[in-house]
Length: 294
Image: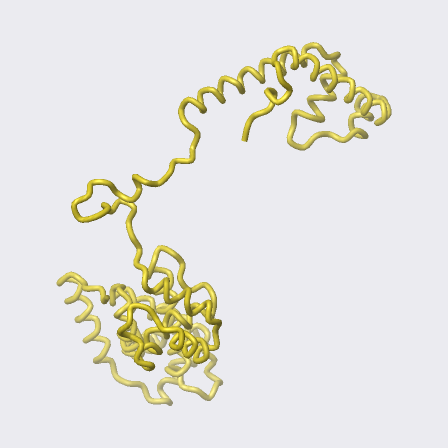
């Protein structure tokens, strides 16, 4: 379904289109001169004349995509971006008209804009999907399959062969094009009061579980502090540096710092962990109560 602009926007677009269509056509020689002045001498006046003269090309290309439900003015502006990209990249030494080169950039810019804005879900992320998006309706019309709600299997196979894509990609794009975006705030049924979002499950923990979790976390922190206080100063340093930081120190690093071998650090760490385990187990009836449930 085509997008319909408000009257003021329609008048502004029409004025712009009429002005663009009045720009004179460029001869091959004058076009080449403008391109050389811009690309070689950075002459902005030449660039402006070149762009104004070929804005008609943008408008003609944009009009072919006006039935994708997006504002015509936006399509034209995106096409102008493509035209500017073409002007920045065109090599005047090529034996080809600028218009022939620019049409690819214009069409590509418009198509990319449509794919980004046609749906809130990205539609064409691969070359095959992009080809299907812009050619599926045309090919269905060619094989007289446009009136049906869904494509026949024979029609899908013909489209897949024509565009050299897989049958699965054709089926996927058919489903995407046949499904419009829907708001979760929309009501269910014409007379209904419930919206779709009312039936979405809330997977967050309940307030009771949240409060319980905070309380248990505070208890575990208190138990750990009490258990650490039972360790010797050297054992506490080892546990804090090895176990209570995101990137713990190595046995060798702590050995150099404390003036002992890394094997001695390992023994002290093992003894300290046993002390912590015994101390904290005095607060719970089962070992798994010391851990947070995921």
